[in-house]
Length: 307
Length: 289
Image (cartoon, rainbow over all chains, first blue to last red; front, side):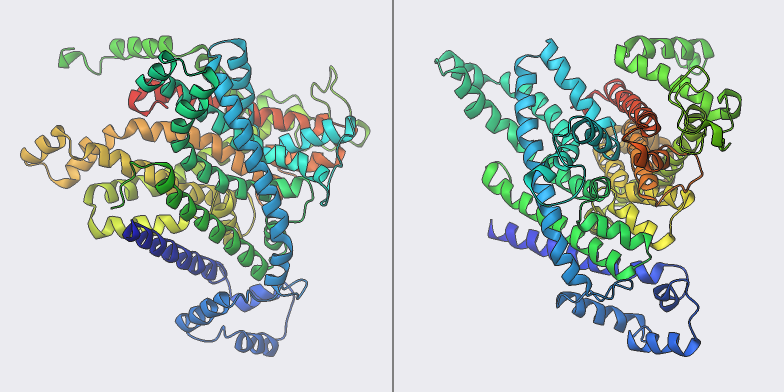
């Protein structure tokens, strides 16, 4: 067990280090002179270009540059925005809670909605309830979130005026973005819980439980759901990644401050330090989620072997 | 079946008919939609009633009508014509990126699954790193490096999905590499190259076709998302995501401008997902979820 934990944590450390390498390479793989890229399209005197090159250490060998970048990143120094000149790290610290709030809210909606709809769908298999749930799930998987987001804005904010159109602050601001983002993940989960439940409900131990007179709701929650949950954790982790990626789009639709919007603006304005910082935070967050999920199998599934 | 009938066109035709009979109603509808889509894909000019780029100041913000079936946008351009021309842009984006993903993942996944060893360990760890850029993020990393635009979006989506494809290809190879017919080929003296080409490649076709179909749907969504964010196809190109992005400012009063491109994306993606499910059931019963 301890060996498994150590190996898995070691792997996560390597992956995070690899992520830092990829983020470092983003600027250096871009065709053209990095210093000129940092200046954008503005005509700059040659001496100034060389001065900045020296100041940023971009005249050093690439290995040394990477070493400095790595140590700097470890210290939490992500450089300054080329547009606002503010430190990227402090801007990230400001917007991370907004994205985290959105991701957690959509995840909760997806888990609660996906589990409930999945159970109902399995219990009322092949009835109009099951078919209705399937259609809702298929729509959630097929329609792009930037469009369903606009649909919700049109319906619930413009026509019905139940929620504000854009912005950040109250719970009301959170509802539409969270539903938009959670629909896809919830849809995937619904399908999975449904097939998992159908599988488990056929098992002998469920028949046994029923035969000895265990009430229906206890059979479903204690016997069936618990065992249907194991594959769901894996999918939830992947879905959490999809949510983080989807936040990029949804934050733009709802003009909500967050990492995703910061990243898109960074790319649009060719603000490399901002884009790099945002990518780094999302990728590291996702790696750590993966680690947490792997470790949680140990608790959920006694059959996992720690090789 | 005697070997001499194999490859005869009559047998193939009845096999295709048999496949179609075994499709679910949803999958059959999906197949019909795909056939219909090939029209605007191949010959948009012939089908579109108007020039998709024609600006007509007198015609702006027309609601759907007999002349403009799906209305006109803020420049008076006919939305149906732009959708039809956008089919070619958006579907080519999807096709091109799926091809790029396959071109990267097939050789790599097969090599990794077949030769294994340190090579496999190193490649899989590198893929772990790339897979920690979730969803659209790896595509955004590539866009940051290459810059925006339709062509770069194709490359970005293609590279972005390639790690996931590689994993599928590898596990498909792993599941067959120890089977008796591979061993038999080896015992018969076949070299690795021949085994890979004649025995491994045809037998991993099923999962590859399934992931390419579902991946096509995903590539269309990611490509349209990039267009929507202003990082993919650029206006005035008629592309579904860009059309929604241009139309969102008019959501309040001219709902038809963003509505129809979104419905089109949803319909196409739904079609491809249904088809992917059907192919999964048809080609490989073991893949059924």
